[in-house]
Image (cartoon, rainbow, N blue to C red; front, top):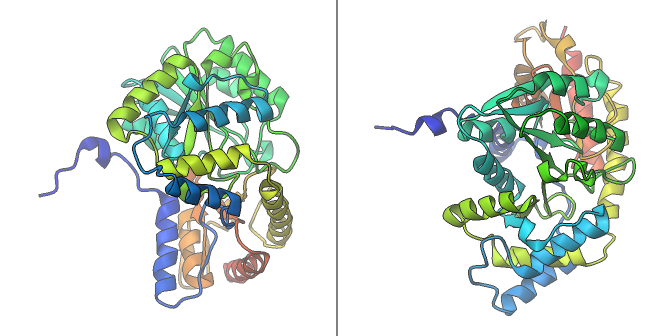
Length: 398
């Protein structure tokens, strides 16, 4: 008899991972599926980082590390924050975890009590709302629109804050939209939080920091008047093509870092020793790898935007970072290819998977059911072919 906890039963399966698995299942049957559902760079980890990992093995980094991470990595993260972001964080304000998702989970479980409210601008990354559920908090969703580049306004935030508000998520550059907030926009949000009269915190997800097409990354932690309410979540997965190495981290007020250290000590202890030493090399070594990836993603962004504009039924904006396009598709609802009628974005995604053999993710996974998400972390050739298939399939809907 299956008798799982209500805590687990309340969680949704990750639709991004679900769609990726369906893609792999079809590929295993010999079907040529182009997978645009995956949220990871299609580049390999740079050689100097892999060499650092090999050296770490030779140097016997095969034992447990301190729970918050090796001192060398904590120092490298502190140095990165100062060098790249002009932010001062001591090493005891940093906790290294098994990926940024783990870092987020640590923070939510450390901060949120039963029925605490957590503000989440939609569209949002799939795990935000589920982590709040796990902590028995209450999700307060703020809907944004493509017309506003999917960014919340200070007025929207002000109206959402109540005495029960404990935290808010902010993701810039954004997964799934690729939108990013300007310095002035971040300052306006920070001022709303600072003047709210509520003891609330900002979870600033900056994992796509380096994949920015318009200029220097801006962190909301740069404003001194809000710094003690900001928890930065970052890692090495996106900027250094290290998704499988599973290294994320937080930079936060000392008491929050201490709480995350406490919970991590009971759940996982420190992350992989070898991955940590590889991450030291990633953060400390000058390399062209980031620029090369960003240049490639920008070129692909321009390619996909141009091709998407040629597909009737897709309403798009131009993302400024990350590697996603998030078009509105509700004008296609109610249309049919003669055998099936498309009523939702999820049905559209299944139609495109089965008929066009292209895997993408429905917007309902991100709290925005009228949209779909493409990842353009694929070769130019695959992107051209995928968009051609999608165009042909959508043209059959009348």
